Image 1 (cartoon, helix red, strand yellow):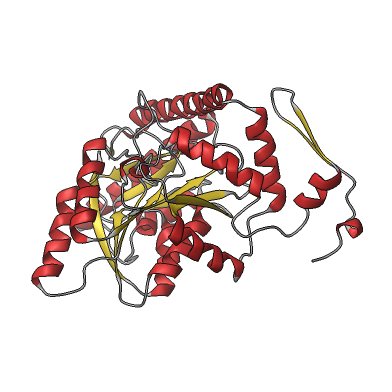
Image 2 (cartoon, rainbow, N blue to C red):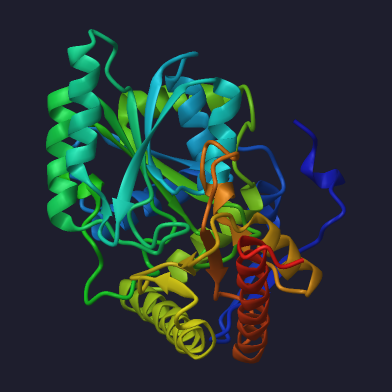
Length: 384
């Protein structure tokens, strides 16, 4: 461990938007710049356990937490610990491409579970498990879900379906990996119930992230699971990342100590209102420019709208044309395990661009869709 006296920093100060000032000096500064425990900074662990008890209310006592460098690292480390080559993993489809990329090197049998506007369909999970039993094959080991404001669809898995899926997990003995970075970016009347709130046996591994609600650059995520699983995950951290950023952890602790639960809820409400307004503006612009050209569902959370382009069997060429016109959309291929499948969907992100930029981008997209459809029809009619 290096001597902190040799670090070239005298103090670090941060000012919150409400004017609150935080200054790190002395021992706090030294700790924030130094190696720390792999599980996390002890005072922050205590504070975060209180956070989880308040917001997610674990049903059993033998749970614990661990800090990671964002929830993506948590997902990767869980997969690395649990999976062996050929193990079956069920994932909602379409799903976040980062998860697919984390799974590929581990070479599992990846089983896609389709979803509708209410999220993953439990009956499909049951069919997968029954089919495995019927063919005397090992049952799936884990189910990966992004239940709130899913990337890319914006769906929220209903409470009824969560209960049904948890029952299936008990029946067919698989783990549920609840990756929930958009938990506080929902647009429904109350916070959706989490799988952690339903779990009585330590079957759920929950991943939370501060990237969407505090800062993406802080790179802080939290794994909540049975304490025996967390012990093994700590060992994995010790031999890889070592620990999440000490500076980020102490800044988070300072904020949580400064803000009471009411202030946190106010912050979450502001986030929800901001993204709900962005969603509504984008939906109105989709209606303005793309009515008749695409189909879509209204996202219930998150940062994305998932659209299906009519009359075009594959959107890859269209996506490339958009990029050349300064419009960056993600083609649906990125959210499929098999990139080669024909894909009619595009993901629109409304989190960052201004309403004026979104208006211009969707107008450009509409023009390019019209041109593509015209070209398809000309080719069909033999027009050169």
